Image (cartoon, rainbow, N blue to C red; front, side, top):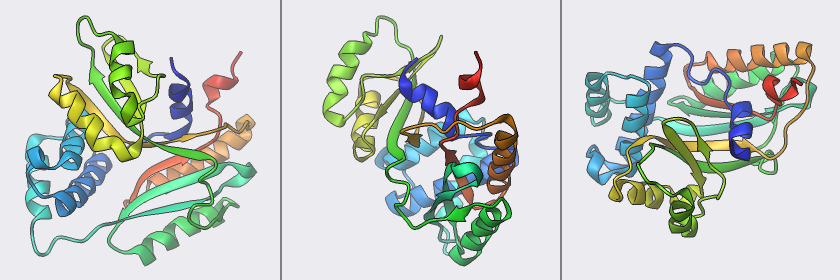
Length: 244
C-alpha cells in the first residue's frame, strides 16, 4: 500500500454516516456541479464524477436524476462551498468542508462544536502546511494493466507514483488542477472509474492516547452530524498505526 493510503485512513472518519445523510450530501454536490457546468454529464466532468460516486454509494438512479432536475429549477437553493480550519483538543488539526445555503448558520454551528470540545477555529489557509489537497480516482483493474506504464502516461498531470491497490480496484492520486484531464484520460482509455473526488492528506500524523482519541472522534461525529458538512479531515494518527 502507498503512503497516501495510510494518510487517507486518518482523514475521513465515518465519512458519510447513514444512508439518508449520504444521499443529501451527494444531492448538494450534484446541485453545485449542475450550476457550474450544466445538466449533461457528457459535457460536465464534475457531474460525471459525482454520479460515479453516487453509484458507488448505492444512490438510486431516480434520486440522481431528480437531483439534476431540481438543480435546474429556479427555486433551488444556491449552495456555496465553504471550508473551516482549526484545531481540536490535544492539538489535532481539523479541516471541515461544507456546502451551504446559509453561511451564517454553518459557521455558527461549526464554531459551536469547536468551542464545545475546547478547540478553536483558525483563519482560512491556516492549515495549508498540514494538509495537501489531491485529486483521487478509483477504477476497476484491467487485465494486463502495467501500473508503471499508466503512471508514466499520467505523470504530466501530476499523478504520483504511489497508488493503492486491492483485489479489484486501484486508486491513484494527482494534482487537483488536472482533475478533468485525468478523468478524461481514464475514460478515453476504457477504465471503469468507480470513484473520483478531491481529498486532503495530512503531511504528518499526530499521536494521541486512547482517551484523547475518544474525545476527538466524538467531536468529529458531531461535526459530521451537521447537514451542511460534506467532509471532515484530521491529522490524528489512525488507531491501526499505533498497534504493534
